[in-house]
Image (cartoon, rainbow, N blue to C red; front, side, top):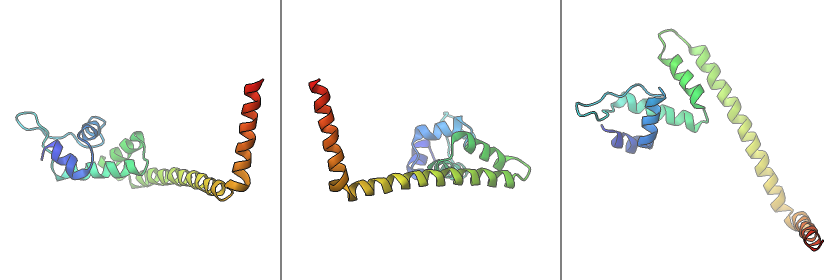
Length: 133
């Protein structure tokens, strides 16, 4: 299949597929006699894998390293697992930060009239006072 068809099948833009190839995240794609990319199931699987790992927040650098370990002749399972564990820890930290922000917004909404409204009125008064000086 061509790159447009691969893009439609994987949900990854043609530009991203070319970028993945350039960055070594997917193997070099074979070309037809006319120079068009000919993408097979092996490449499709790699594109989907890269998309999933990027969606999981993995950096290009770490993803490239993971793929190098995967493609190597020797068994690098333990280092691959370490990379995945590190990524999981980073994502859990992000989740915790997002949850704290969500909790803060819930608090602000739950206490808008008894806290936020008063604080906003004080800020407006300070702004008016500043503008008068």
